[in-house]
Length: 77
Image (tube, rainbow, N blue to C red):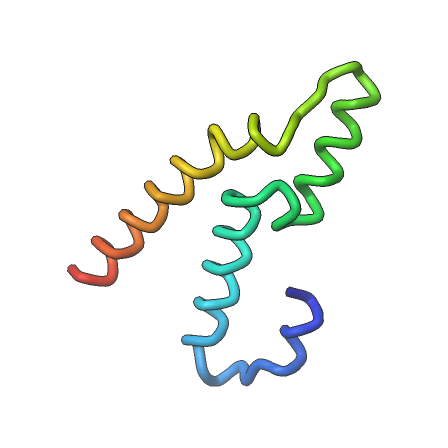
């Protein structure tokens, strides 16, 4: 995401919205979709808490689908 920011025109808001939405969905949907997810998993493992891909997906997929639903309703209104 930080690599793309310098390429975006500040006067055009749509690409910024797309970047924000896609990075949020990537982090929610996939464990590897966000560096912050990896940091949390690593810190959790230091406290003997294991977060697997399956465990993340159990929460991440419904959250992503709900977020998509909210986005569709919001843009439709």
